[in-house]
Length: 405
Image (cartoon, rainbow, N blue to C red; front, side):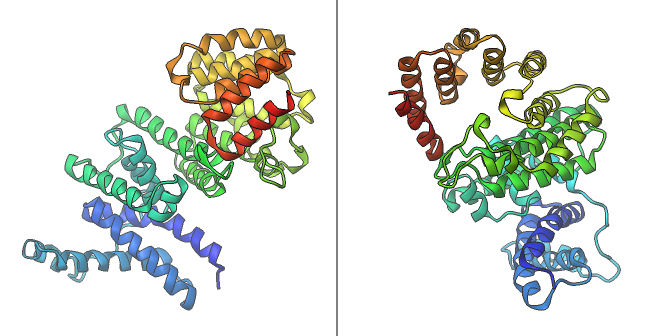
């Protein structure tokens, strides 16, 4: 008999396949998604006692299909649906196709007509198989709030008549960028939580990697998908070393590299090596290449900062933005000295996009400390500590400030 974690993993793998098959067969994304969630709950309870059936996908499809029939029978509009319900039970209908509609489902959940929070929630629930409670817990909102968000997203899909089909070829590249962005946001929220007592949430990073790996399997020739998977693997490889025994943040330069996950690093580096130069270059591939340079350095002092700086310069041309400039300032400081980095950092002071993040002041404190200005560095660290809602980051920044007097 499979263990509970194995069953949970199997259900999350099957959830989008079952939902995709039902939506393709019946339409009504909202009703199908609810039916799949009930089938997943039934499987969790029943399989724990009776074991996993020989064909778990078919079992889930059958149970979810029955839930749909029962629901449609009980609705107030029963008369209008009697014919549909009867048709579902006619012999010879057969089981839904074995076609895997996971990719189509991903595109649907990440449709640009939905807000980013809705895209995140729907992706985690419909494709990731997470419960509403799990998603609410991940984003630190009440379960009722998340339930309303998911309900509104499903209603939006219903009211706008979004078709359950892959987007036409001319739109596919833009839609794929939205899908990757959603997965990137899920990963980032798990890797460094925006608020709360923990620095990271392994459940979110693990789910983001799983979904991105699945996307890579579905679209193996997409260089940016491979780059995104590599980026996640190469950064997640450091997770065990990012906090100490008390849960306090440990910066990259001070991490015990023996605690890094070498298997993830090897897989990530292999992905980058296979992709770079063989597909159109994009921001995820470049970020993955930067992460690979960090991970392959035997020690912080042996990091190839000139190569990292060169990669950030290319990244700024390909995908300019304040966060890229912020990171390039650090690389520039490591190559040409902290004052050079501070000068570049100063160009971000008037950028409104950096007004609500603590990272600008945190980096400023770090570079001022390297430049030998402890008073200004302490003030910058204190400002950064007041701006973040992450408890581990607050503690780390306050400690840096305290050490400077």
